[in-house]
Image: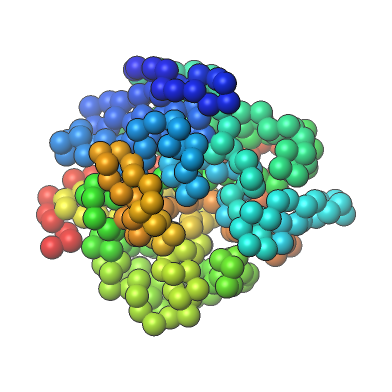
Amino acid sequence: MTQKIWGEAEGQPVILATVENVFLRVKVSNYGAIIQSIQLKQFHDRDVVLGYDTVEEYANDDKYIGTLIGRTANRIGQGTFKINGKTYQLALNNGPNNLHGGLSGFNRKIWTIESLNTTKITLRLVSPDCEEGYPGNLIVHFSVSVDNNRVVLSYQAVSDQDTIVNLSHHSYFNLHEDGTIVDHQLEIFSKLFAPIDEFGLSLSPPVSVTETPFDFNVKAKIADRIDQPHEQLRLGKGFDHHYVHSADITHRLCRLSYDRIAMSVYTDLPGMHFYTGNYLDGKQVGKKQASHGWRTACCFETQFYPDSINNHERPDCLLLKETTYAQTTIFQFDLTGTGESK
């Protein structure tokens, strides 16, 4: 267990802490609940997530690299929703929609380090009533721990008013540290995905992946699917779509593999947004002077169905006052023994 003062934001010191075991070394900051690196010790300390060397670079980043997203991940149509007959209006920071919590979401906040030991860090954030337009004083706890070959993300939240909560983490993964991710092999064990409109808003109901490029129930190279002539891929400039899950954490949701490394995702959330870095533009340079260019990484944003507050009779993102939101996501890393991308 180590921690150091990493820099400063909003006049406050920012900490970078390390949790680790014999398999993994993970660096986490209390600014934006950032996961700055995930190193695989058994694979020459390979770092499998995009990130920056300084707090200032994260503060200037507009791609949500490595941060926690809240109060709501993904887009809310027209930035508006109703709870108990009252209409709430959020900032329109992504065309006609609200994206990832608004103008100053949880990715821009300085969290309190509540506890830290060798293998686990727990952060705490208080989001006041009406912040970014959301009702209720919301208290959030987020922990990152290492357990054997797994990085475990745990979320808890409670509010003093009925509100909406859809937390996610926006780590960008690349299993070979450089180049693009189109040569990675992918499996997503889902039969349904959410189509999007021209502004990237997820629509309801979901549709079948059968006989579409979105069907990864059988392992395929991303490159073989991502540029197929499909209207949904054109609208998303690649994959930028939500997949429906059973919400059973014992069932693997997806598996990404390359160069003898495999990463599996498990979650008790009912879905995951798969994004292939289609809006990374190479204008910013990350760790080891690596360019964050087009499709250099992909995200597995476990979450509730996007914009469910406006589309579902019983929206799963609705958090009733004084009840507890509690969710877990696991990233599991294995050495496969073969170069699966070859």
